[in-house]
Image (cartoon, rainbow, N blue to C red):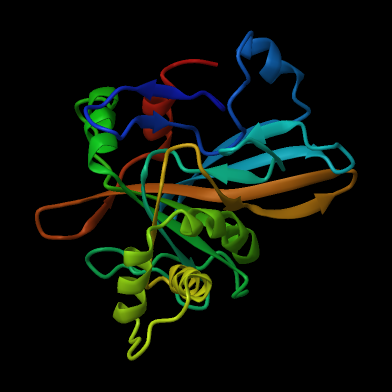
Length: 259
């Protein structure tokens, strides 16, 4: 399985398409193969058929210090961190309020805990165009990527900084869309309210490819930590129904064939 390679490509205007893989941060400049070979982490992926998805597990020593850097500005992040594979708008759906796919199918809950849930990333148009070039002709063209089995608190912490980048006018509009009336709150309160809407599935924030989105749920297994989540991607057919696209094909498309 390809891991952690960024494949940037230019796009007209200010926006720059940046493809990233869903787990393990990109290698620093230099010999990427040697860098990845030295990481104390094993990645496994297995198909999940209900609904179609890819269960990804990262296993690493529980006492190992974090040695991968990600984000802007770069910061040390745990190996359980998941990343935006493309640019786009993201929302979080707690397992207490399961995500309903286009056409009415309900995405299964990650667990019985409301502290877990799914990130839904709606792929930005420029990224969609670039993905179209990398996917095999016979495959569908996904419009959204889903990460199922993420920790809500970690998602909140990760997206707080992204909300902080939003212009005030967008935050005010979100407040109004959420039923706000009268004198608008201060900017700090507007940010808190919009983040709450994102975590409730009624709001979203734009992220660039490679942005940390939170962390997969973790569990101890002896001296190791297992971080596990399920990756999905889907297109929408002419009838408005979600049709799953194999996430493994999406990973190959954004990974560019690098190891």
